[in-house]
Image 1 (spheres, one colour):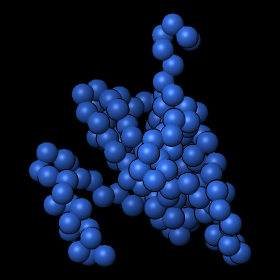
Image 2 (cartoon, rainbow, N blue to C red; image 1 turned 180 degrees about the vertical axis):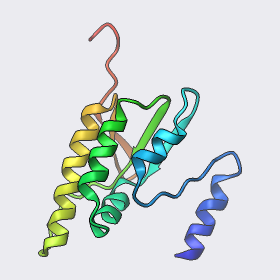
Image 3 (cartoon, rainbow, N blue to C red; image 1 turned 120 degrees about the vertical axis):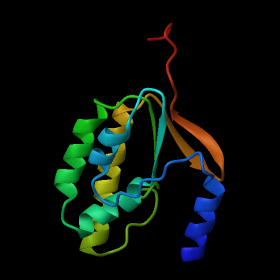
Image 4 (cartoon, rainbow, N blue to C red; image 1 turned 30 degrees about the horizontal axis):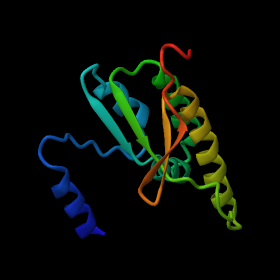
Length: 134
């Protein structure tokens, strides 16, 4: 895993600023958003896991949702779809699937565009509406 992380960082290049924030995502976004930049959150499902394990899910989710309306620039959220398969037994697993699903729905409601990637192909779920059709 350490080698995969090293290669991923090397492929990214020096023009990227990396912030590794395991739990306080809203704070990191509020401290780093600007009109002229793009922020990529990779990935929400890892963040959900971190928050559930640290028992700070409710407060961090609420902080993120409150921060969304305050952000400038382009924000790209990357996440894994967890509700399309079998949900294994276990309390933490069910909490994770439920938390991820509800988070995805709430964030999608705030986003201009939602795209599901399947086998590397973009599947528009919520396309950007043109000014004429709104």
